[in-house]
Image 1 (cartoon, each protein chain N blue to C red):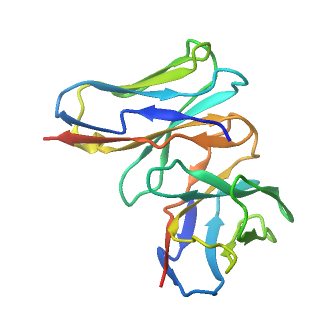
Image 2: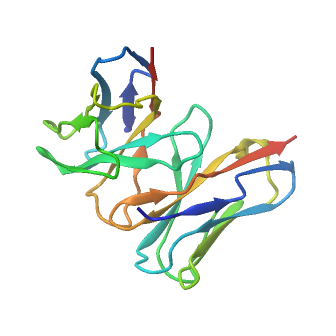
Image 3: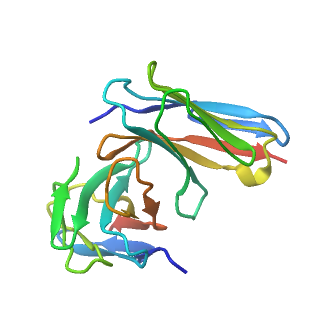
Length: 114
Length: 109
């Protein structure tokens, strides 16, 4: 089955700790995205990548970092600089990252701070 | 950041009722509007991509219309079923997606 997988489903972070959320896709898509969902707000773009070894900041990139070493993988690191990391994180991909393309989403990871 | 609004925030309907909800977006610089359906504990699922003023799209009992001049799109569900219960998201596409907060639909058997 083609699709997007995210792991883990739940993740706990201690104060001052960096954590990495995994996102893998086997759709052969060039573009991948990370979104954050908070209660009462729409999904907001954190980072996106249209090609391997290149990525761009979204609207709320502060306190996050990403890498795109392989086409299939786009991990997101939530650093200790992110002061309010508790949220639901969604990864998505699209064929080329062009306007009007459908984005396909993973099931998400919920991050909780201990 | 683009302001995309959805109304109502939540909706409860009886099985068999038809319903509709609204997505509003700035009418300037329009490229496309996307509708998604998001069931609890699942991934958001794409419903429609709408690009032209006057577009109407249909998928089974669900349909959508688009008015780019006034900046809104309607999503209609005819004869709602319990399996239609989900959050319906819209996103304005301007080289990146700008999402509304969603409409949560509950269909009561």
